Length: 202
Image (cartoon, rainbow, N blue to C red):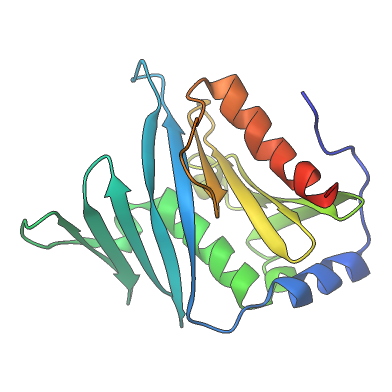
C-alpha cells in the first residue's frame, strides 16, 4: 500500500495550505462515500453531491442507492428521502457529523490553523500531496471520533477518512465517480490514501 511518508511540515506550511484551500461559497463537488461497520457484512456505498453554501450551511444530495437530500443549517439537519416527509434532527444528536462538518467548514473558510483548541492538527506531505490529520482534544468527542484524515493534492482535498474508536470508518472520495468502485475496505482505504499521490504525479 502506498502511503504518504511521515514528513511533518511546519506551522507556516499549515498556514499556506489553509490559504490555498479557502473557497468562496457556494462550492459543490461530487462524492462517493463508503461506510464500514462491524454490524454490516458489506460496505454501505452512497454517491451524490456535497454543496457548501457558506455560514455553516451544507446540502448533501444522495443519488444512489436511494434519493435523499439533507440540509444542515442553524444547528439542525433537515432530511427528506425521495418524496417522503421532511425529518428534522438536532445536529447535537450526531456528534460525528458535527465534527466532520466543523472540520470542513474550517477548511473551506481558510481557518484550519485556528481549530487548535478543539482539534490537534498534524500536516504531512510528499511533493504536492498532503495529509491533514485532525484529532479531537475533548475526551467525550474522542469517544465518538478517533481521527479525521483529509488527503489532498495542492489546493484540492481528494478524500476524507473518518475513523471511530471501535474501528468503524467512513471514506469519502471527493470529485469521484463510482465506476468500477471497490467495496473491500483495504482497497477503499488504499484508494483514499493514494489518490492524492497519483494526482500529484500527473
